[in-house]
Image (cartoon, one colour):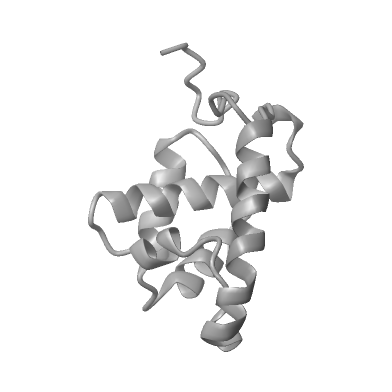
Length: 119
């Protein structure tokens, strides 16, 4: 995978990434994802985002099955139907294989959460 330093992200990209990681952290801990909890996680991580981001993420994720969203990232949309998904599957597998071959390596968080130690 490509490595991008957090400092090279635009403000919008940074804010979206921070909110995404905060939401994933809450989900992984089995907690509800709401605006207040997102704000607490973001603050605890030493990051700041525009005030509207946590609310947008909370509203977008309300009632969603996060686990299902994570497992269906590359699948076809709900309106596509099984036939479209079946037609897209071979092409998607080839494309995924090419990406895997090109993107070997670890993902560097670029110190996004203030931790730049190598593990």
